[in-house]
Every structure is written in C-alpha cells, then in structure tokens.
Length: 305
Image 1 (tube, rainbow, N blue to C red):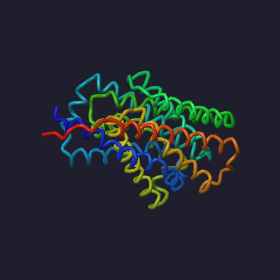
Image 2 (cartoon, one colour):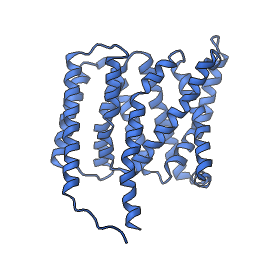
Image 3 (tube, helix red, strand yellow):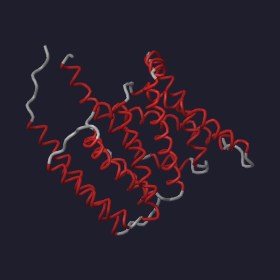
Image 4 (cartoon, rainbow, N blue to C red):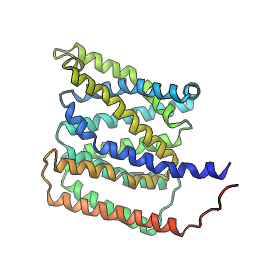
C-alpha cells in the first residue's frame, strides 16, 4: 500500500467527525421547527427523505456497483440490518426526548456515549489508552454518575441513546462497505417500515403532518438532508479514526445540546448538572492534551517517493 494512501484516512477523519457532531449538536433547533409532527411519524419521514438524498449522491459519485455488491453479500447485509435497526431506535428516542422537554436527558445520553465508545474500542477493537487517558475516562465517568443521580426518571432516555448509537458505531466500523453505500442500504432497509408508519398516520383522524402547511412539508423534507449528511460524515470518521478518539470528540455535540437546553429551551440548570458539566470538560481537556502531547512526541514519517 502506498504510504500516502495509508496516512490520508487519519487526516480526513477529523473534519468529518467535527461536521457530524456540530450538526447533531444544533439538531434540537430543527426539532423545534417540526414539533407539531409526532415522533414516530417524523422518524418515518426522515427515513423516506433520506433515501433520495443518498441515491442522488451514490449516482453522482458512481458508487452504484458498491451498493449492488453489498446487497449481494448476505454477511454484510445482515450487519447493515442490525445497524439500520440501531440508528432508527436512536432517532426515535432522541426525537421523543426533545419533543417532551427532556433536553438534558438527551444531552446526558451523548455524554455517556463517548465513555461507551472508549470501552467498546478497548474491549472489542483492541485499542489502547494511556494512563492519563484512563484518568480522563474515570473523571468523565464521575461526572456522568453525578448527573445520572439527579435524573433517575429519564435515565432510560440517556442510556437508550448511548447504547444504540455506541453499538451502531462499532457495527459500522466493522462492516466491509463504504460509508455512503452502507448508509444508502440502511435507509433502503428501513423504507418499508417507515412507509407503513407514515401511511398509518395519514389514515388517522388527524391526517398526515405533511399536508398541514407548505412550510412544514419543506421542513420535513429537509430532515432527509439533516439525517443523511451528518450520518455520512460520522460513518467516514468511524472508519478512519481510532474509536476511542472519536468518542471524545463526540463531547462537542452534547455540549451544544446542553447549552441549547439552558438558553433556547429554558431548562433549569441545577448544581448537580453544573458539577457534571465541569467534570466532563475537564476530562475531555485531559484526554485531548494527552493525544496532542503524544502526537508531537511521535516521529514524523519520511515523505513518500
């Protein structure tokens, strides 16, 4: 393998990760816009409008053959069925939480998720952490435990989000299929149940949310873009970065959600939540500093011929 080709993924993983987590961090603002749409129906529409976005990008990038190859591989397809179910469950829990004013619970879920990523990366993927990084994990765990102690009634939301998305990332990292073809297949696998959910709401007394107003229809359609693009960026990052490192970058998204809960959603910030916030960011600072210091100490490889 050419050394340049070997080093390129590590360099391109960070921008993709940052783009995904910043987009997800501000997603509650979009959910405010479509708050009139029931959670199940909104997830159904998200899946339906994600499919044409993915297919358009697949066509533009000439990756149709990769999609067909993955569909023909039963082992790959089986893993993608699992990853599709996990991400659908994650979407549903998250939308329900935001619609029911459980913003801090959603934020906590994605604070727990990086810790879970670190553990999965070390236990399942053979990745190793330094002592300083383990200290950061312990400090972050203390912060999460503090916050969880004050949020027992909504802890199922936090744990559901953490485990569904953490496991999704591990599955996608192991599947031998590209980021975009994998996401396209996941969306296609979910389109039948999504269509059934949307049809059921259309037949109900209140009717389909898609027909309420033109602006709401456009907002629902925009959900496809806001679903496909960050998931594609995450899938790219998950395949190109150490999973434990990716886990700590993920603190960016719940922090944005946490701040939105405090400002836009007007939720009360209790002392226990503030204590967790301080622990989490102290842990992230320690972890990132250790990565930076170890990166500077590592010899720079000679340029390729």
